[in-house]
Length: 387
Image 1 (tube, rainbow, N blue to C red):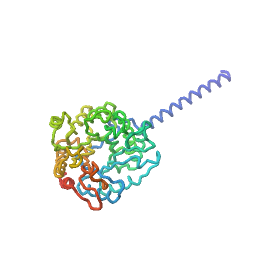
Image 2: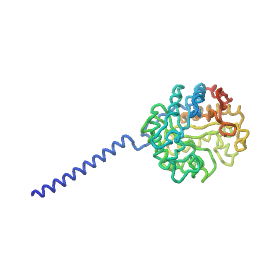
Image 3: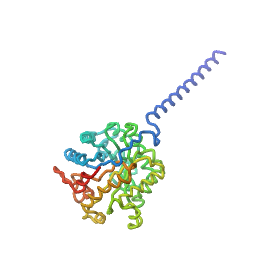
Image 4: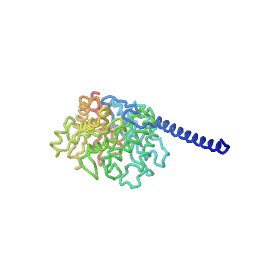
């Protein structure tokens, strides 16, 4: 072999070695990424089951420390073990991506631990910098890049690893007003759910990810999508691996909690959602898609006592009925939905700033105000019921 041939051989051999080395580095990086951020499957991360049922209340703990602690004490004194709090993404990471204000969430988590309450954070309301380029016509819409939302979920779960029990991914995305003023789209929501699920689990594998509670509605596109159709759309878009519990909303409207959807549909033009037990219809969808091993979380439940506003008064109940129906709803779930029912969240301890003009004022189980806690019969009945 001549010197020129030798040099060419060494160059070829060296180039081959560099290619092999580069391939090895790429494969190693892929393996490392797979170990840190594994492609999720239904068994990728622990699916911790909770007691059936568990007892929770929604509260409004963000701005006022004194009312927040009073209201957490009310939840604890009632023998309930979960508190649900909305976390507006923009209130924590509003200035710019990666710039966080943890003051409020730190305080809420610290206080919840003092009262031995499991924390459920509902995450929505995108910051201005993440807003979709198509523009939102409401103050709550999906971000341009779902991964920005996922990154925020990761930051939350990393900061509160082992301290926040569960995260709810958005709220009522089957309504146009909760989806940036755009027609609801289950496939788009699944992208948001996926981004949050992977991000939370990579930061805190034991935290529970709960899909958004869907609004019971018979309205169609473009303003809304019935929750049954929306849930089917989620499953068809591949949602199953990306949540630990299915989130549902379960208002009872004018019916007692034992009313069957078939009976209600016969009275309400075929619509089955006008009752608490509509949860069973959503459960059937889960079973149909071989997802029945998961539990269901009721993220909002209750009855309104609004006798004032025409839009709601027609299905309002009395304060005494509200109290009775609440207790009976928990009893029905305990006797008929075990073991697949998980946390059941009462809507709600009143926001101290609500007035009678607010729709939610009439769903609450306490009266707004400070400093004294003014209890409605529903709170007292829930406090005293068997658990």
